[in-house]
Image: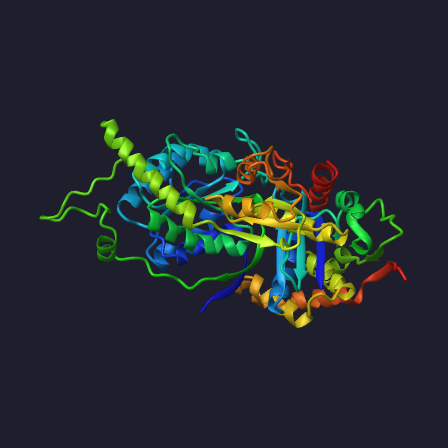
Length: 184
Length: 361
């Protein structure tokens, strides 16, 4: 199994940390992982993206232009990465703030209203965990128990009390994925 | 007990310095390698092992601090990125001339000049053909993974002390910034002053009565002596060329076409090998691990064995390709492909270059 994923959105949405938690979860189940961020002068409000690869084999290129899956969290990223999903691949997005929805006919398309769900849970910071939950529902590349172990590894000890909240957010995402287009 | 962690290449390099028993790190921040000094300052190795970490007032000050500490037999390192490494060249030439061990890392960014902060491999000439003045060489290790960013710190110090030579870890923005799984080696204790004194008869540790003066210098105004000194250096470089070549061959056994690459380009070329094989093209990868010494002998040896061409893949306008051409001595077609100025080529572009420049060309 090899999953090549791009996560793209605004700086401050937790794009990089979502990727990091996924990578740590891969390590927890003995897989090879790579996490390659864009490292330009991104900041809150700018665009940020990270390529995460989880594989049973040694990983070759950590930088890719064609992906098995794309998680897209703003319009700029939709414009940039929709075309990068391989035919038959998967695109997951939050429709919040999206003015042009994906148009490809040869990929699977899913939505999760993560921004709204996180706001309803009373903490917009867990937005990225709602997205992660939705992604794992569609692509269960790592086991949930390993995601929790990954969370523990990637969060500093002082934030460990927030793990149950993050777990709730992941579950919220798992339950609220909407299939927009599923290939046969 | 080794430890499995998810780390950036830069962080792995910094952690490995502490674990390798380094006595000191002198640096100055620059993107994309600032995580090295950030990690060290946060980790406080001065509390953990007694290692000194100091942000110097400039890159030039940092390399001269390295020169001083190396003269005292200390395990010492610095790191920077391209423009900062250019500033250090005078000091590196002096360290090479004075035959001192040191380790430094260049997390290369696009140039020339201040360039860009994005990844590049355009410092190959500087790294392997001098950089500073004079007839000197340095061992150049090219990590292609976060694991190697850590391991090559330990190996680099070993080589530096074995040959009393500067060792360069030539990385780039991709390897420095990405996170991968890394299995950290067990900590090696720092040497005590007595151990240094005993192990390194050249180190200036304070003259004791009845012992010979130890002099660290790269200067000799008697040109005959200087020529002799240069002969000694050249003999050392010859020995290194014979003994310390490292490379990795991936899918080369039945290959007709070979990508030659190092660092992040080797990772990208490895993917291009997969894409090529899926199309029925018998491609392989010759991954350079040491850039000096260059694996010329092995490359020439492969030449006659059904290889129809080599494609040198590097994020530069064509630097390493010159060494590939020298190695194969015209016995095979050699072409270059690479994006540069901070643009990273994709596996698809690399495969297309093979098809156009080597197979179809």
